[in-house]
Amino acid sequence: MSRLFWKFLFFFMLAQLASTTCAMSFWLRHGVHAPRPPGQVMLGGVLASLTVAALLAWYVSKPIRALRRALKAAAQGDLDVRIGDNVGRRRDELADLGRDFDITAARLKLLMDGQRRLLHHVSHELRSPLARLQAAVGLIRQHPNDVEADAAIDRVERESIRMDKLIDELLTLSRLEAGIPNREEEGVNVAELVSEVVADATFELSARSALVGFDVRVDSLLAIKVVGDAELLHRALDNVVRNSVRYTPSGGRVHIRGEYDALRREVRLMIADEGPGVRAADLAFIFEPFFRGEAAQRPLGHGLGLAITHRVIHSHGGRISASNRTSGGLAVEICLPA
Amino acid sequence: MGCSVTTAKVLLIDDDVDLLDMFKTYLQREEFAVTVTDVAAMGVAAALSSDHDLAVLDVMMPDMSGIEALRRIRLTSLIPVLMLTAKGEEADRIVGLELGADDYVAKPCTPRELVARIRAILRRTRIVERAENPPAVIGAGLVKVFPRQRRAECGGTPLDLTSTEFNLLEALARYAGRPVSKRTLSEQALGRSLARFDRSIDVHVSSMRRKLGTTPDGRSWIQTVVRQGYQLLAQ
Image (spheres, rainbow over the protein chains, first blue to last red):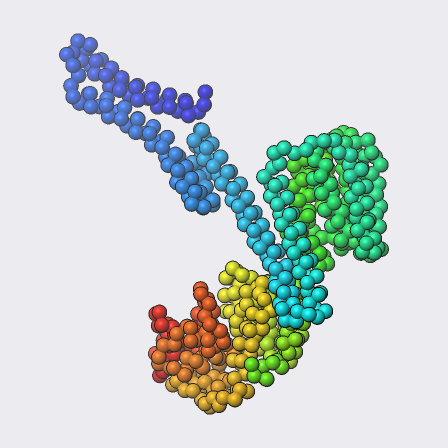
């Protein structure tokens, strides 16, 4: 039986005991044949049980009142309120309820702060292309029929594509956060996934005639399959590889290693670049939305790629972490259960 | 637009290189001489070189460097500064005005708005070069404004005012002893009509109060007249 049950039982017993003690003591003194107990004795019995009952009522209602106050405050948006102090060292279901409330409020606050930060970043990120759009339109209006106007029209197109892409990524991220109800589950060959992503990246690099090479060793994964959503996993991996390519200087290489850990039954992928790396203090934040390293060169994207990867890997029951290589550059390690 | 305004030298400081390029082209075609930089520190150095008539500064540059740049410019220079702020970010705007920016434009903005705002500030700062003949001194007791030299003093001590603050004080001194509405102040000092929920005038006035100190009997030189505006005491 639970603690609250025993507390109630104890108090009711105590109330009964108090009133019976009064009656018993009267009978013991005057004998069982006394006609009826006088008023004082009756009053004493009633008062005794009243006191004990009031004690019980107060003991039960106090934490409930605290809980109500806290819930009211939370309903009005104040998630900093905590019940822990009111409960003290009490241990029963009501105290547990209070502690559960505290945990819920803290978690909600964390989530809401995250959302607020995201909204702030999003409005900022949408403003930059908007400012460029307006400037481009201004140039076209100024002199509608010259070379600058053509360039400005190209700019309008580029900026609108960029905004579209950002919104698409935002939607993906929010879908991932809400959880995907009917995700496609299938066996995905990670080695094949890697070669697809590398092929895409190579194609794009050759179109820009950029000189970044790949050093891929994933042969040990050829026979291994991971259960999950192929499209999401492709996207997750693609984001990491693109990020590595972006920060690798011309003439450098992106290294991809894959291995299977038979003991922990997981696939381990390491993607490393030869770029400037990330400040040690920033390593913990690179999977946050819109994080941008300081020392890093000016980014071309908008900082949602790695956040999406992070969510995808976690929704597949995997882990992702980043570290600086001793030889310079950033290494991202992905572990997926296989 | 007088001819002196159109040949003005404008310095643009913003971290968005593409945007800078477009603004530069636009302003050049409006016959401004334009210098651009995307590094805050270089912007500060350029602003302090006194080769420019006005600086446009993006205060949302990464790591608060925009606000920091403004602070460093104002340590030694009174060059007119127009800041670019984010729409809805009231805090940035107020901090900027408090640090001595002359006015702001909310970004994203059309280049036409930007040019209009630049011209408004330049018109006011170059009032001496216009055909008008301003009086040599507008006196309001201890506070004296010298429009021709664009300087002011309080009890004989020269005041370090930004050009917007000078314009405000000039407008207030002209009507010393009488309240001047915020709308009039906005038109005369900022060269634009007062926007709704615009607190620029209040922020400028509060930093002027700091610079002016108090009257001999301990009151603030600039008094708030409820629902009417501000008044410079004429004593």
